[in-house]
Image 1 (tube, rainbow, N blue to C red):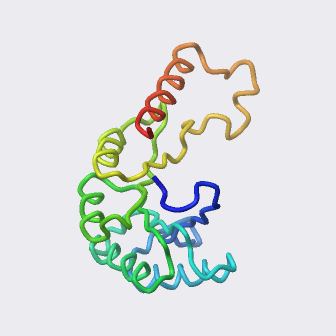
Image 2 (image 1 turned 90 degrees about the horizontal axis):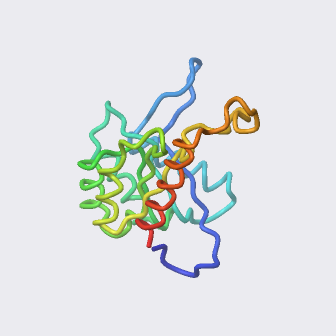
Length: 173
């Protein structure tokens, strides 16, 4: 549950991805995350970011160093809460150990087509952390595919989508 006024807007953003000439890369170094947070504060025109999430683990940086940077951002008051993305159960536990109840969200891919984040959902429920699925429809509709009769979900896929919605509602209550 998000602390504070239920009617308030929570400004959230992420840091840790970098643009390269060929697409995207990751940078989980503490120095980069702190610079990215400062750029986000300026771009958003706010003094504090409500929820700052780390995009994905960087294999070149020990995960505890990356999470330590989030802790520093929390301690200096630049962010109110921290989140992580694309994390496995071990990384979630490590982040929770370092950040405690200031780790409020995990954002991993989860959809009717991609269900491998179920262990992370269960762990989030156990630890009282919000699970925020990315690509919750599994890419359905990105190109208007639902509007074309030949690509409308069949009854099995529709039933899976309904089941997923019921499961997510159950987990969030």
